[in-house]
Structure formats: structure tokens, C-alpha cells
Length: 259
Image 1 (cartoon, rainbow, N blue to C red):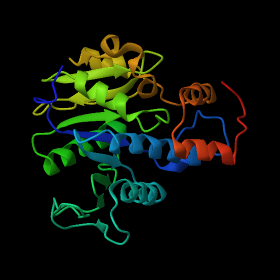
Image 2 (image 1 turned 180 degrees about the vertical axis):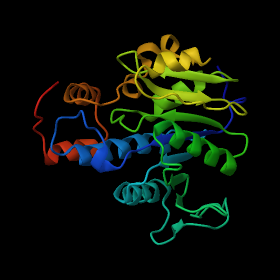
Image 3 (image 1 turned 135 degrees about the horizontal axis):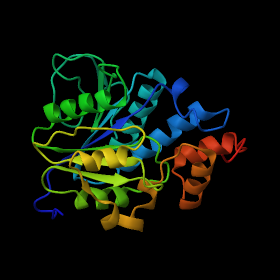
């Protein structure tokens, strides 16, 4: 575990499918709106996690999500509307928004970078792409991939998990069920090597990641409660939903099934 004095800067990576394809197991007619709302609440918690988190990279090809995330970042960092930049430009820039030099499909707003899904071959290549971008913009950073469907995530939970991450190599946190992965960390200089998909928790352990689950246990319930089904959503609701998900459910509160 790292102390505040020795902790590296963190960049959090969040992959997000096109909203039309997201949350296929969530048996609700508004699943696309809920997928966006949960991603916004996840991003909000990351941006509110404190100065140790220097960046958030969301990898998505969805234009609606890009717009909504950019607006959220403006609100969190008090950046005036109309100052965003997309496409090429200078990496860096303080207190404003820039593109990243020589690279396209990027929108940077404060600490948020929304990147096009490259090479568009699925979740794990998207996360590898996001990690490469993070380390280009923030040399020497640690990176952590988290799920986009964490509507009950609290900033303090994320801080706790990042503080528990190993100072070298990789760390992994299981979801509430114990088979999936909600957080995969890589210390500075370590490759992320994501293996998300069915049985990802065991896959990450098998590839050398340190298990953070027993250490964190029940202290991070919102971080471990990803949402794939109506039953998951009900559990997240009991933990306390973020504002975007709460608004989305208020607009259409009736689920179909709890399967």
C-alpha cells in the first residue's frame, strides 16, 4: 500500500460501448439512457476523487456520451463552455481544454480526455489504447481501469482502492459476485495487460495481478457493485445512486424483470 507521500499520480480509464449496444442484459426499455447515466455517475466519482487522480480517460465512439461527458467535465472543473478542443493540438495546457498533438478523435476538457475507440477491436484493446494515451499525457502515472457501470461509486471508495494498489506490478479487485473485475491497476512502468470478459478476475490473477479483494472487502461496496441486470440495479439503488442514474430512473422507474 502506498502512502500519500509516495503515491504516484493516477489516471483512471473507463471504457464505454456505443449506447445502442450497451447493457444488453439489463431488461429495461431505457437501457441506453441508463448506460449513459451510470457512466456519468462513474465519471463524476472519479473527477471528485481528489488531487491524486490527475486524469480520466473515457474510451468511446458514442457521440452522445462524448457530449454528455464533456459537459460533466466542464461542470466539475468550472471550464467555460466553448473552450473545448477536438482533434490535434498541444498535449497539456493548464486550466483549459486542448487536443493531443498529432492525434485525432480526442476531446480534452480539464482532467477528462474522451478518446475514440481504437483500434475498435473490443474492450481490452480499447483499454490498452486508453492506457497508452494516459501515459503519453501524464508520464510516470499509474493507471486504473474501472467499469463504466458503477452508479453507486463514491469518491472515497475509489481513493481507498487506489491507495491499496501495489507499488509495482498490477492489482485487481473483484466485483460483488466475485468472478468479474471492477478495477485493474498498473503501477508506473507496468503494463495494464487487461483481460476483461467472462471470468476476468481469475484471468487477471493468473497473469500476475495482486488480489485486492480481501483487503478492501466490504469497504468499497459501490465500487464492487457493477450493474448488468435489474437485480444489480436494485442493489445499487439500496447503496445510493449517483444523481444521473437517479434522474434516469425517475424518468422511467418501472423495471421489467429482476433476472
